[in-house]
Length: 433
Image (cartoon, rainbow, N blue to C red; front, side, top):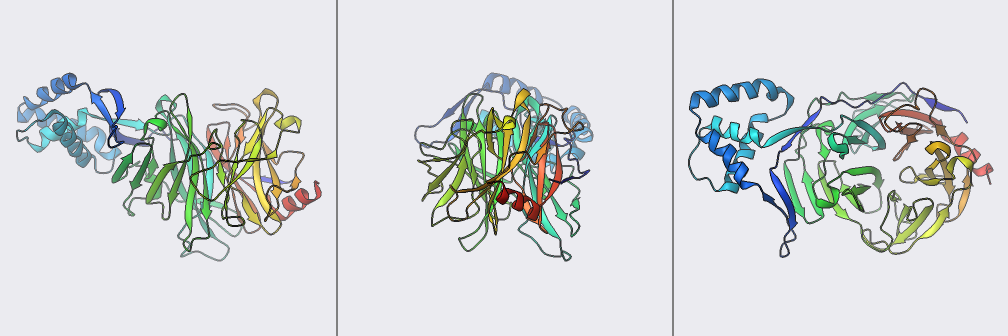
C-alpha cells in the first residue's frame, strides 16, 4: 500500500517555557471535608527569603527587578503581573500585613516562580481533529487542531496544541506557534477533577493542559481527541492516562471551543490500563469505547454512562509477527461508509512499533470486516533513531479529501505526517477477510 510521507517535522523547542509556581513544599494532602488538594510548606525557608527581600532598600530592589525584567520579561506573556500574583499568594501564606512597594512585590514573587521547558525532551504522540472554526477557507481546505504530548524536565508530560490547514492537495500548512506558553486564567480543582479556562484571545498554541492533581503528578500521557456528535452541539472529548509514578488513572477531557476544559476521572471496573479511545457517536443508543485492559489485546466497551465502564468484549488479539508482543489502538475510530476505520499499533521483535488498521461494522463494532496482515506504516531508516528507537505511533487521524490524514510520532521524539488513499485502504481491508 502506498503511504505518502511528508516533509513535515514538528520538533521539540526548549525555548517554549511555562511560568509556574516554585513551591517550597514538602507534603501534599487532600482535605477530608472539602476534597481539595492542599500542601504543607517549608514556612521557615519561605520566611527567610521574604524577610530578606522586605528589608532591602528601594534602590537595591529596583536594581534586582531591572535585572530580572531584562532576562525574563520577553519570555512570558504578562510576566510582571504573574510575579505580583505570586507575591500575593506568598504573603497570604505567611500572613504578612505591611505595605510593600510594587518592586518589592515583584521581587518576592520572582523567588517563588520557575520556568518549565514543557517540550525540551520530546513532542510526540499526536491526535488530530477538525477545528471548531471552519470559516474563511478555500474550496477543498479544512482547518485542524493537533494535540501533542509534550515532555519536559523530569519526563513530565502535558498536552499542547498546534493549528493549521489541510489544503485541496493534501498539503499541511501550520500556523506559526506563539513563542509563549501560558497558564490558564482560571483553575478550579476538586480532588482528581478540575476545570481550566483560557481567554479566547490566547492563541491555541499557547494553551497547555499541565498536570494539576496528585494522580497526574508524573504526567499526562497520550490524549486521544475525538469530535463527538449527537447532543445538538459538537463536543470534543479526549481520553488520556494520568500517571503518578506508580499508578495509571484513565481520565476524560471535555471541551467545545478549546478555551474551557473539563477533566474528570473515568470510573468502573473496566476503566483501567492505557489506551482508551471513545467512538465519535453513540452506537445503538450507548457510548462505545476501545480499550486494552490486559495490556496486549484490543477490547470494546459499551456504557449508558460516559464516565462509568464496567464490561468489555474482546475485539482483536495479536496474530502476526510484527504485533506479537502487544497491540492497541491509535486513536478514536473514524466513521466511513464501509465501517469504522480503527488505526492500531503492534509491537514486534526488538520492541519495534508499527501502525495498522482494522475495519468494524458500523452497527455492530464487535464484528470485524477486515484486518490487514501487514502494517500501514513502520519506521524507516530516517525515522528509527530517537528517544525510543524503532517506534511510529499515533493517537488519531482524520479523513480529508478522500485521504486518511495520519499524524504520527517518530521514535518518541518528534511528529510527522503521512497520507493514505482512503479508497485503497478500505478496499484492502474488505478483501483481507
